Length: 75
Image (cartoon, one colour):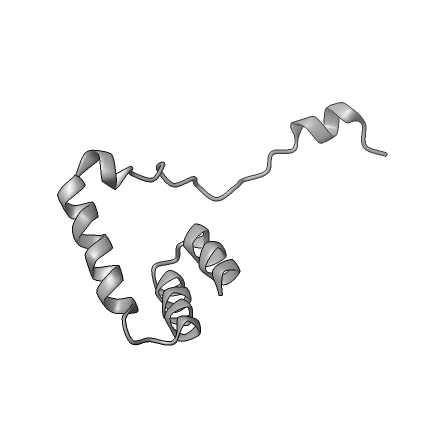
């Protein structure tokens, strides 16, 4: 039978954490504004469902769990 001390000694290896996300609007406002303009242009003329599906796929390609979760909920 395992004791609490035995369990505490077991180590679990977790995936490395990524660095925190950058606040683009603060660090590079011109890049942020350009990204917003691109997003606005891409949205024009597309069915909103298709637009979110494209964003979901981009999040999958980029391996971004945060964005994948967000766009899945938005869809």
